[in-house]
Image 1 (spheres, rainbow, N blue to C red):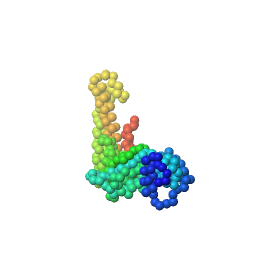
Image 2: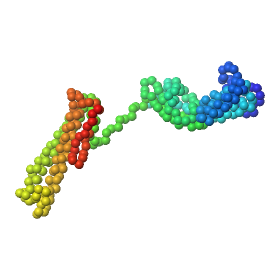
Image 3: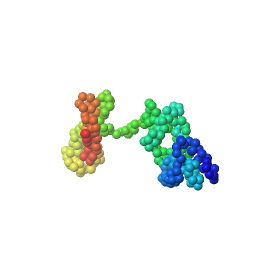
Amino acid sequence: MNGPCRLLSACMLAGALLVARPAVAEPTKNECIAAINSGEDLRQAGKLLAARERFGICVATSCPDTLREDCGQRLGDVIKATPTLVFEAKDVAGNDLSAVRVTMDGQPFADHLDSTAVAVDPGLHRFVFETDGVSAVEKALLVREGDKDRHEKVVLGMPPPEKVTQPTGMLPTMLPTSEPGTGRTTGIILGGIGGVGLLVGAVSGGLALWVTQPKLGPGGPDGCYSNNQCPNGSAQARSDVGTLKAEEILADVGFGVGAVGLALGAAFFFSSGGAKVPRGAAISPFVGPGGLGLTGRFR
């Protein structure tokens, strides 16, 4: 090299870069100045890889000695600050994988993995790992300046995440889109629940109407008025009033459950075959001050 080198590290870096550079025309003084200035701008912007390329120009022997030494110092600082990553890919059995394609931020990054440290710019990057026969894996990494040989492990071929099951006790709100047999079975079960609800409602309503209510009437043993106010205030009268209210509530609930069960049962049953219900239709039960019912939407 022409001229003395005051910094041993700068000389070593310059020598290595000159060996690696192809046989091209040496940069002029103006090109050396432009390279060190643009390299510093890129360094300040966090684009360390591009800064390394620019500083690699101004360490050429054709550059002035003072500028070349300054450039070599900056090049060493950038190399020291540039983070490197080492990716380790395995399958679900723990075997190493090398035939893995990697993209970073949507751009090609590596066509295989060989446990070699790779330099990247600092910042948040999104990596995608792909190999034949399995689903791709995405991984977001926040890479910090000066992070050297950071090891990151990815596992390819993991089973899909388990589906979230509906909490026990909640009625289904969407009509089925699976196999006909499953929909018919669900419809029969819901229809049976609805039938039981109607039976309970009918029995409770009948008891209230033909058994308990006559006891409370003016001609009954309790001697109550139509508003269930009993002048004699007997314990039996109070008991019969409580029984009547319970039977009325049970009748309302039974008829409501019966209506919901039969409606949902029919929807599941007929949507699985025969009469088709539009895909995307939804039926939901509701409970309100006036009782139970169904709401629906179709699209």
